[in-house]
Image 1 (cartoon, helix red, strand yellow):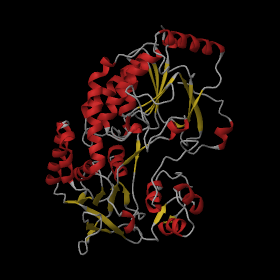
Image 2 (image 1 turned 90 degrees about the vertical axis):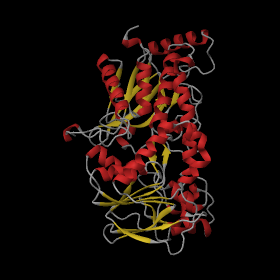
Image 3 (image 1 turned 180 degrees about the horizontal axis):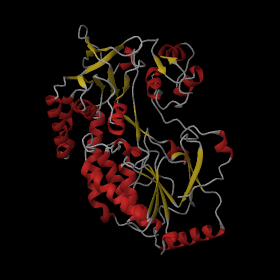
Image 4 (image 1 turned 30 degrees about the vertical axis):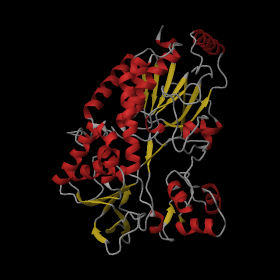
Length: 497
C-alpha cells in the first residue's frame, strides 16, 4: 500500500493526547494529519518557547522533559518520513461529516466497509459514516480558510482554565494561573515582581514554584482546599507513587523558595485603582464561610488565580457526540458514540498529561486497526489501559479534594463584573433570577447578555451558573470559534494536508 492509498486520520490537537495518538496510528500504516493552533507541537503542558528566543535551558520550566524529547523526536521522524503532516497555526472551527465524495473515494470507502463487515467487527464501523472535513482558519490574522479531509477524526482538543470572580478580579495584574505559566514557558517572561498564586487545584503548585524559580517573589500560595482530604483517598494515592513523589518535590520547592502555603484560605478581594497593588486573603471554615477576623492584606503586583480546568467539547458536540456532564464519554477504545470519531485527553475528562498520553496511545492503536478493517487487539495497549485506570481513579480523587470552595458566590458583590465581554455584573445575574424568574443559564443569558460576547460564555459560564444557582451544562455552539463571514461564504477553498 502506498502512502497515497493509506487511510487518513485527522488528529485535532498536538498536545500529549494528540501526539501519542498520531504516533501510534502513523506507526501502524495510517496517514495522519496533525492539526494544531500553536506554532509548535506540545500543547499547553509541553508549551515551547519561540525558536527566536533561543532559550538556553528550555527544560527548566517543564515537568516530564524526557517524555517530551521522546515524543518530539518521534514526531520529527514521522514528519520526515511523510507519514504525519503537521499543520501548525491552524485554528479548527468546525468538523463536519463529508456529504459529497468523488466517485472513486466513495467506491474506496464502500470497499473498506465491506472488508470491515466481513471481519465480523461491525459493532462500531469507523468508516461506515463516510469521511470528515475539518475546517480551520490560518494566516497571520486567522482569516484564511483551510480544510483537511479524513476517514476518521481524533479529538484531542484539551481543556481550558476556570476562574471564578471576586471583587477586583478584573484589575490589570490579575491573570489566570495557566496564563502565568504560559508566559513563562512560551515567552520566557514573568508577569510581575511580587505575586500571589491563589485558587484551587494542582496547577497552582508548578505555577508558584515556576514563578519563584524565575525570580518572582511569591508572597503566598493560597489554596482553598484542605490537603488532609487526601487521607480519604489513600487507595488512589498509593496506586500512584510517582504522583506522590511529584507532590513531595513541589513541597520541597515551596520550602526552598520560602513560599508561604495557606490552605483552607481564599482571596476575598483584589485592591487597586489602575492596577493591582494588594489582595486580601482569609481563612475558611469547614462550611466554606470566611472566618471573621482572619483577613490579611498582602501587597503584590500580580495575582495568578485558577479554580481548575474544563474540557473543550465544542467540536465533539457539533459532530453530534454525546456530552455527559462537561466531558465526552468514550468506550474502552476511546471511541465516542459517533462512528469514526475518537476522543482522548482532557476532552474526555480533565486528568493531566500522563492520562492524556495513555488515552492517546490507546486511541491511536484502535484507529489504526479499525481503519484497516481489523478487530483491535487490546493486548497491544494493555500497559496503557492499566495506567488509564489508575490515573482516572487518581483524577477522581483530585476532583473531590480540589472542588471550588462552597459559598464562593456569597463573596461576589453585586457590582462585580462577571461577564467581561458584555460587562454584566453579578447584580444583573441575581436580578434575572430573583426578579425576572430565570431558572437556567440560557434564560439568564437572554435577559442579561452574559455569555453573548466574543468568548460566547466559555469564560463566564461557570460563574453565571454558580450565581444563578444552576447546574453548569454544555452549551451547544454551532462553531468552535468566531469565523469571518467571508470564510463561511466560500468554504470551497482547501489546503488539504
